[in-house]
Length: 151
Image (cartoon, rainbow, N blue to C red; front, side, top):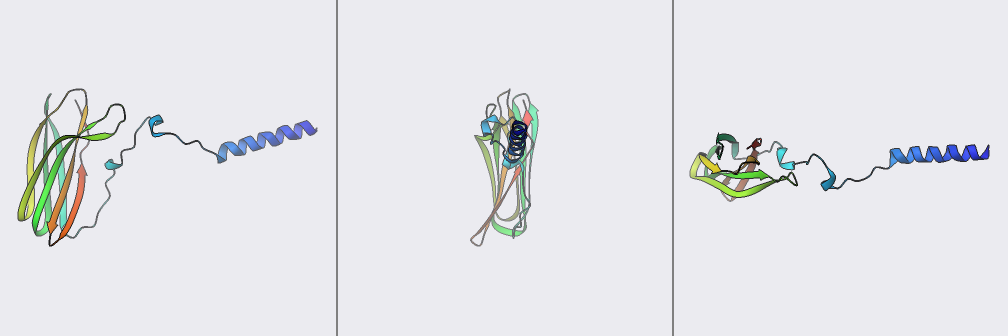
């Protein structure tokens, strides 16, 4: 009888322990990487009205991208900077390729631009655009990110 009580107590402790304790998983063990940049929150801005970017496949070796940034009124400097990113196959993280193009206008409420990038087949690419405004010693920026395109 006493042995049955010990076995029951041990079983209860194991069951409770199973529900109370969880193991930590290293980032390298995750099968689906979490990319924080994919989550863009709504920001409150005084000057930036809107920022957009796009990505499109031109052919098997080139990507095209557009960007535009608009403000509520004319500002000293308004920009959009297009950055080409590639997905690292081993880590799943997006990294800048070093290919970028910046479009700037002064004393304006709008700027836009278009660019073509040459790519390498076998990878996934996306565009990360920084939209920014400088006016009266104030600086504002927001980021837009396109979905990825596989080549």
